[in-house]
Amino acid sequence: MITTKFTEAFGIEAPIVQGGMMWVGRAELAAAVSNAGALGIITGLTPGSPQLLREEIARAQDLTDKPFGVNLTILPSISPPPYDEYRQVIIDSGVKIVETAGSNPAPHLPFFHDAGVKVIHKCTSVRHAVKAQDLGVDAISIDGFECAGHPGEDDIAGLVLIPAAADRIDIPMIASGGFADGRGLAAALTLGADGINMGTRFMSTVEAPIHQSVKDHILAATELDTELIFRPLRNTSRVASNSVSREVVEILRNGGQFPDVRELVAGARGRLVYEQGDLEAGIWTVGTSQGLIRDIPTCDVLVSRIVAEAEAVFARMNALMSRASTPTSGVDASALAVSAR
Ligand SMILES: Cc1cc2nc3c(=O)[nH]c(=O)nc-3n(C[C@H](O)[C@H](O)[C@H](O)COP(=O)(O)O)c2cc1C
Image 1 (cartoon, rainbow, N blue to C red):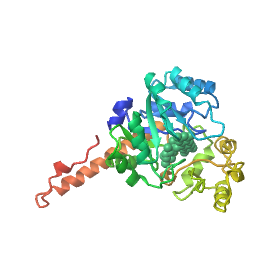
Image 2 (image 1 turned 90 degrees about the horizontal axis):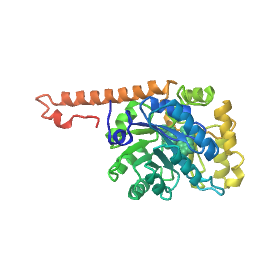
Image 3 (image 1 turned 60 degrees about the vertical axis):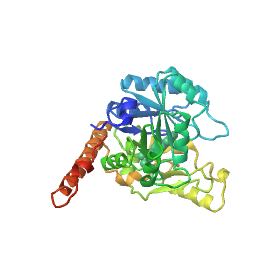
Image 4 (image 1 turned 180 degrees about the vertical axis):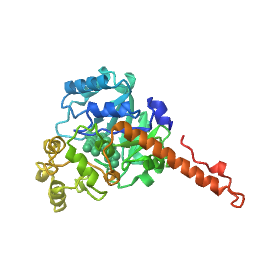
């Protein structure tokens, strides 16, 4: 058992969160993750309307009595979804945890806080994390360059981003991007985070409601098999490497603009990948952590295994410290012993 500021603040057993995932973060996955003692998250925009989100939340409430959250991704758009209505559905449904991402959560915070909803804000830079903390969010999810989806434009990987953020963040903070096993959890805790957030790893579980061929593809893929699309538009997104994503990269590299790739990147085409398993149907999201994924376990097995692996890492580190404290070394191991908080 690993107890951290995050597990205590959010009432969960394992310091592991399943991040919002468009087309993937459905009730059955979120409930399975929460039933495993971690924090499952329904992706608010996936059901398609505020009313359908209400039904999705109700479905998760039937499947678990553990805490789960809803992701509200607020991206710039010409015709934005009715975010205020989504927010009200979350509040009315009695959900007590929200993951915000994409842009400044300030307009939504007073409503959530008045309703007793805790907000985890996911962002990709220390400056945005500090700003969100100043705004009064309840936790930070700091997403490194390794991540699936939007890594931002700074290209700072977790090894620097996590401790740099930890130096400035006092509220609970989880590390995101590139985590897939207990070594990663132990590393995140060591770097100053209070837990981890994972997307790609949870896609490759029994309960993830996506086509088996997507899961099998992730198993076979390596850390090299992603593309960064929309780089020249400064709206970078890390996605699976396929003929569609490579074409998008090529068009934009050659000076193309969004209208030139609009049809290729259509969300409806990406959705087909997850639903029908045609890996070339469109753009689909995955992170570099696919290079660490070797099996498709249940969420329960995965969460217990990650915690056990992290505990084993800490035990091994403690043993190294003990060895270092033999009389000839002159090192006081008890002062250096590693422990999970
Ligand atoms: C299929 C997929 C869809 C995603 N969609 C969203 C989304 O709609 N909103 C969001 O905030 N993050 C989204 N993410 C990002 C995850 O919540 C998480 O931050 C990211 O996956 C962490 O990196 P990892 O994949 O290396 O674990 C998505 C990730 C994946 C794999």
